[in-house]
Image (cartoon, rainbow, N blue to C red):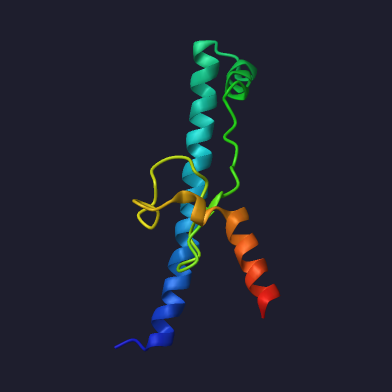
Length: 107
């Protein structure tokens, strides 16, 4: 029976073998794609140009904060469960900062 350490060593070896195999497969796929593009007459540069026209997703700063869990919400998408049925202004980050500042000043 293998010891825990031996099993961990085997796991690491397997992870390395998996990564090598994945890289080899990816290289073969890329080579095949290039061959197919060449056969069909599609210019690789035109495909790259098409990819640049995609809209870039912009990260939005959070506007609301749950003081109990530290969870934040940007105000976009579905309302989080901790905010449902409550006044969002109470959880607004600038509002919370002001409240914390006032609390610190009173102590």
